[in-house]
Structures are given as structure tokens and as C-alpha cells.
Amino acid sequence: MSLFSLSILFSLGSAFFGALTSFLARQIMTVVKARDFLTINFLLLFATLLPFAPFGFQISWKPGAIVFITLAAMIDALGNYLFFKSFELNNVVTASTLIGLSPMFTLLLAPILLPHGTKLQFQQILGVVIIVAGITLLSPHSTHANSITTSVKDQLKWKIFPISTALVFGANIYLIKYLFDHQYTNPYSYYLIRVLIIALITHLVLKPNYEWVKPKNLQITWWRAFCVLAQWILLLYAIAIGDPAIVKAIADSSPLFVLLLAVLFKKEMLTRKTILGSLLTTSGILIIGLYPR
Image 1 (cartoon, rainbow, N blue to C red):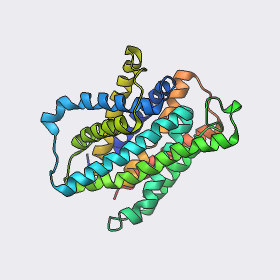
Image 2: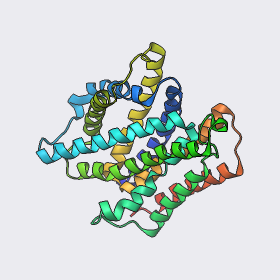
Image 3: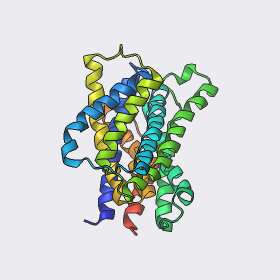
Image 4: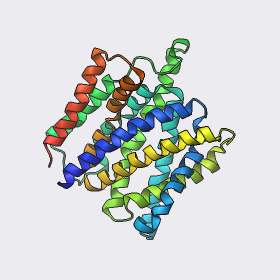
């Protein structure tokens, strides 16, 4: 199997676990606020990853490497706060759909952040655009569980959080790719450092309330942490061997899996709009996969 095909496979796996993550994020956000949740969430991730450090930890201790790794982790910290705030204010399909727009930001920022990189072929750009169009169609009309009792102004305000999440994650992927290309660290090590830095930052800056930490809530948090680990490790390895824009587009097709899971487990009916969105998303993935560079 070629590296390109492997990056596609990793990206699809990341999208699937991303869908599971979205469902669990929405569930936990109904009992705890984003600012109170982040520190415990990332400490659990760190504790789960730490035992594997002797087998895969790799980092360059050059000052420049440390600066860029820390910067990438801090940007991720901002993105994660916006991510959980998005699910606190919006329903799961809306939040995951709007966050799924990040590959468009990745593509639009490519000439600025990756000026000397290899250019995408027309078919690949078309695939990314089709995926984003499909994701947009999968978005429901309402943006909040209690949208009937909220104003249009509030609904628009809530959309800022997932869109900002998409922008932050869409841009930061280039910095992460830079870390791997220069062998400053590997995917496992970056993620281990990343979750520790985010845990420290959120504890110091947000000053969370830990009264929500109970066995039942921790169980949901750990299952979500497991899905997050699978999602991000697959994504980071896909970034390391693939093209950032292509990888991001496929990995962020998770709203397609969110929709399928919603139908399977919530018995939701498919509309023409959601069927078209699903077909477009799948078509975009196939177009990218059929035209490797």
C-alpha cells in the first residue's frame, strides 16, 4: 500500500472516531461547562498515553523546536476550548458540520502558509470543495437544542464558535506538518506534549470547577478520550505522510458518520438535503482517492 493510500485510510479512520467523539462531547457538555471540562479531559488523555512513552517518545531539544511545539500546542488549546464551547451551545450535527468546514480554511491558507509546497491538482481541489459543500448540506436549520426559545441573533452568535474552531484547526495543521517535516517530534510525542500543555494552560487560565468529577461523568469522559486518541493519532500520522489539505478534508468528513450514527441509533429520518450532502461528501472523498499525486 502506498503512503498516499495509507494517509487516506488513516484520514477515514480519523473521521469515524471523530463522529464518535462528537456524540460523546455533546453528551458530556450537557452536564458540565467547557471551561470546567478541559483540564480533566486532557489529564486523562495524558495518563492514557504516558505508559507508551518508552516505546515512541521522540523530540528535538533545539530551542526552535521547543518554541514551535509549544506554539502549536497553545493554538490547539484555543481550538479545543472553542470546540467544546461549540458543543455546549449547539446540537451535535450542527457543531460537527460547521467544524467540518476547516478543510476549506486549510485549502485557502495553503498559498500563504505553504508557499513553496507542491501544488494540489485540480481534481484534488475539486474533491475538497465538494466535501465541504456536502458537509454544509448536512447542517440542520436549527443551531441549538432550545432553538425555538432563542433569538436569531443568539443562534448566529453561537455559530461563531464552531466556525472559529474550524479556522484554528484548519490553520494549525500546517504548523504541525512543519514539526513533522523537520523531525522536531513524531505524532505520538507531539500529542503527548500537546495534551499536557493544554491541561496546564486550562487549569491556570480558566480556573475550572471540579465539582462535576464523579464516577459516571469520568466514565463518559474516558470513553471520549479513547475515541479522541484514536482520532488524533490517525490524523497526525496521516498528516506526517500525506498532504495537509487532502488529509484535513477527508478527516473532517466526520459529519457524514455523525449522520449515519444518528440514523442508526436515534432512528432519524433522512431528508433529500441530508442524502445529497452525504453523496457529495462521499463523492469528494472518492475524487481525492482516485487522483493521487
